[in-house]
Length: 401
Image (tube, rainbow, N blue to C red; front, side):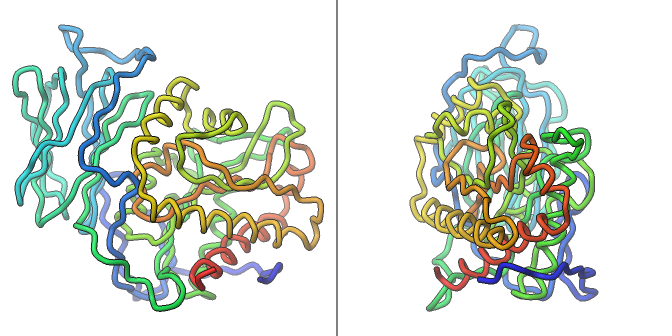
């Protein structure tokens, strides 16, 4: 694999397919070279019946008059191929999928109330969401336009019940040799009011990772012929639950969330790559708190919840790509930065990876808290090498390594 790539820019193709229709925020940028047939959805949780244990942390959000948990908002992210419904609540609740029909899917929230609009238009795969109070139980009914499956999980602080809807899975479409990679979602972390980690020189994580994504996207399109979506294309804040929703709607074959690391010791260095896994070690704890924007208790409960589910094939592919990305990063940095530290591949319960229907990784490019790496991240050459590593890893993954 090469170690050097010239910086490249590319304008969006005039004949590129339209971005997936989203019901919130601005449309993400696309670098397209073709209009490939979207891949079949794949599940990261792989279960239709999920029940969340009540969590032990407190919530400051308002409750219903009787003190029971209450839904305070219903957020919808939709496309023709996939949809995500996010219910924000005042308190943790128990929930489960209920038997549905060919045209309706159900999720029941126990001991939950709701006051407000009881029907919301969505569009695409999910036509409408309806909230039906049935005694102490709140039923969420999803009217679907065709046969679909749904999966449910939660995100804490604030507590959210996330419902992902997709078409039924079909057999993998990989070619006889190698792996199918036609679409990629690059996710520059943080943005807008959330700067991410800040280095002692004043460099901000949100700026660095957006620049790396802008360097990688046109190379993926020009050199590999891959259509690429950026979950954010400017300095705007995109909620964690919306990022992977955009990737799912896009039908991405890979999802790469790009970040910079930080550590209170200021001495920590290195490049790390993470996959979604509830059994993280202590080294990932501080990273989880920062990237999840949550407490240790919340991240721990979410991690324990993840351990109940395992899509072995998807986990295996995520690990394969993570190892290739880690290896490509060190190889790319070797010319010019031979002292680059290999932090390895690790697993942790990152909220941004939850629900991804494709192999998904979180790429911690370097430590902005370290003086040496912060200085390097400030240079175009170093950021270009990190972008090159993403391209090289995708190339190797597609080739079947």
